[in-house]
Image 1: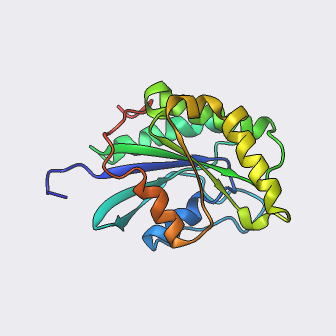
Image 2: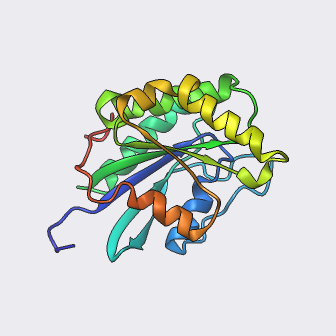
Image 3: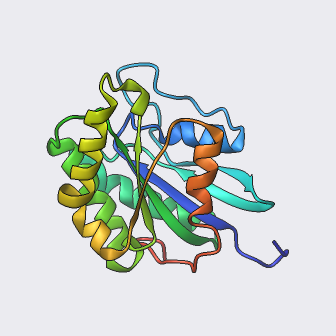
Length: 193
């Protein structure tokens, strides 16, 4: 990346406890606190740089967008991006904990805040990532949940061009998900400018 090039930036959004901070830590070597208590750990957006295939990528870890606070988090994300100066957002990764066996109002609120943050154009540059597969007692049930998410609950994201992926908590998995976004044209999210 040349001295005048803008950092490639990826936003990590989703409900609390879905693995966003763990993902950033795994890729960047950062040591942000992760949720080891009942309350959310990430209360303000934080960023770290990862190097993937020799490219510098700024990962923006965000607070959980559970329930009604999703729109407040979206405003905070916009403020954080503006504080970074000129960055190119190349994608948004939405995290969904696959072990959640119902779509309740908090998950729906989180998803709606994600869609609002993206707007129609940036939604096509998003990846919906299912996490916490190791918490399932029956992996076949997870397969069924993932299919239902993609084809029913999150079908509007798929229709807009969003991709779907699974994260197994490994470094290779995290890199593979980020590589899906590298080289994409920058997108504009709501509140960025």
